Image (cartoon, rainbow, N blue to C red):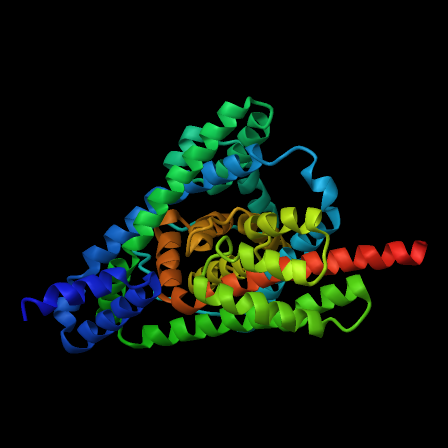
Length: 410
């Protein structure tokens, strides 16, 4: 028994984060089922995990967005303008699909809202006023109070300013971005324990009916991603190529989407997309730039995740959403998605930014992030598959479309 215990521990330690999260999820359900009183005491573990997420999210958004803009090469966009347009169009369209789906099939969550003041906006004018006041907030205050709109505004401003700084300054900022990402990875490594505590305490307190909400939420998320992959993206490709888009769409899903589903990393799937682009006969000087860039800013799956989870919180809290506010949310979600971290679950950490549009405080927004980690075993895999396969799909569509346009003009 003594000899086998370390072996079991080592096998668990070396297993993937997905496997560990599944184990934590099953253990939390089992504890709530067989020992509910003990399960209630695990709420502290979940609170620690949520607090850690709350601590890293503001600095993560600030540093990653600032570093991304500061290290973007001058003139790079001129070579891939049609691809960038498709990236942005696809991401915004995905957010719109998520808004429509969340309106038709609203999701409800179990959230602890006691002792938390919630000020719901009265309409689009109040949202815009709040947005403007948040933009001009003091940067230190924005970081301290998790004002994500202010953080985003200062990150963009500082990023643009530092683009004109020396190479050394930009390298330091890149190293700082890598350091913050490392800390986020460390926090996320404790997700199995945090999810164990959250699931066990939530089910023991609220009953197993809370699981139904998670299943419904996951169904909405995956349904949106399938719709974008099999309907919305083909429509965009057809508009660009004026021919049947499905052979190209299905090839990209098969060759790129499947590997991305299991690696759960757009960055790790870059070599796969580069090889596929080469086999498709695309221009190397174009895809060698657009594929790595797409792994950073082409985030249709992330836009869906941010939008659906934000509107789930909005519906749970009974906040009304009018059409102009929904459009604004789609724009914000698309912008947030472009800055999503490359680590697993990175898009979840940008949900508080979208939630702040509706006056939802960070304490509640981070509970929604934790729910995202609970369903993240499937959600993050599907999100990465959509993101990565769309990188090569839109690169191919733009390249082939430009080639055909040049041939017609000739």
